[in-house]
Length: 486
Ligand SMILES: Nc1ncnc2c1ncn2[C@@H]1O[C@H](COP(=O)(O)OP(=O)(O)O)[C@@H](O)[C@H]1O
Ligand SMILES: Cc1ncc(COP(=O)(O)O)c(N)n1
Ligand SMILES: [Mg+2]
Image (tube, rainbow, N blue to C red; front, top):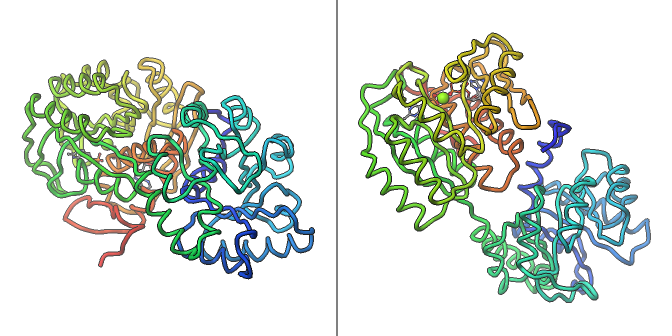
């Protein structure tokens, strides 16, 4: 991760990830008399998530006219529009981006012409090409041919191991390409791709819309990611396990839970806590990991030293990845959710396993012994935690008086994520929700800054939706993008 990653880049990358699952590349050779715009519209109705206009034989005027037409269609469906090879046409029609091959213009030159905000896709066949393209400014890679293909003359195939090596080597998303169809797509099951690029399986189909719909369904099953929350139950549904599961669903990830403790709790406070036994927590974790291995894990209320020992032991045993540790100590209502003697276990056993820890201001003070009055203090404290435990730190600014700026501190230094303060007293579960959303996005393959930014955007939306329940600090609307109440 580099500090030159500006806000725009993060936002662009988050939007791009949503666009990659079913990437349709046009090919008028299959269409007979059907106008290309008609075929693209059918593909969009079938649920394709991005369109690339690939024209090899059109003169400039016709190409530009076609590009303008297809771009307007894509935008009507809220789908990004990419032009193959031709940067001049892409700039002339203000496309969302360009895709270039290894034989086309140099990646650096393409990036310079496009500026920082347009999407740049690059074809790659080897890890070396992939790393070079990433380094020179590519936003995503098209990797293939993963199967034999008729769409491109002499496209050599790459092995699924090489595809996997490329996915692991780069941090930008990878779409598989080449000969993908309804029958073979399930063979991509165990790769870490973010999507599939398809030509003839859509545009040569007798019913383009139906073909796209079926591919989209197959891809949904294939790309489904899972996340696990290890936390306490909040009977009132606003924080803890309940908030986490709602958040994971809203963020498009399948959620699972291991419960550390039951709390009798509502928006006004915690009336009681009944912890799980260490053995039963261990049994819950074994049931989960033995069957559906989570792509990311978050921990919330971990309560006691023996429970922390079980969690750390099991996470190590299973070599769990993408672990977000929310060092929950005191609820918004003031109740203690971590016994005082457990702070040492939390620091010594869980923090070293964490990809990210997410303390709020009070927790940052308790963990460092420093007092925090301003942003410079947040940076000092976060740096201290990062150095002490070797994990990335998100020091949350939800309790700052004027803004809601959060600080992400990594080995590369500080990255501020500005936040608009929402005037809403109903903040029960904000920390739980944020850490669950970060885990969900890490599960989907987002880089850490992207995952934190996407989670913050989701949280801000859930606060802004303005749900108002209970007699105290009420819960958030976790499903704000999915439904309105009522
Ligand atoms: N009133 C608010 N407006 C906007 N964002 C907020 C508000 N309150 C909290 N947040 C955000 O919610 C997330 C959780 O932060 P915080 O409330 O500090 O954690 P905790 O719930 O652990 O105390 C952070 O991203 C923070 O910036
Ligand atoms: C079971 C449980 N876990 C965590 C919290 C923290 O809530 P917040 O996110 O408001 O700090 C809570 N109130 N209850
Ligand atoms: Mg919290």
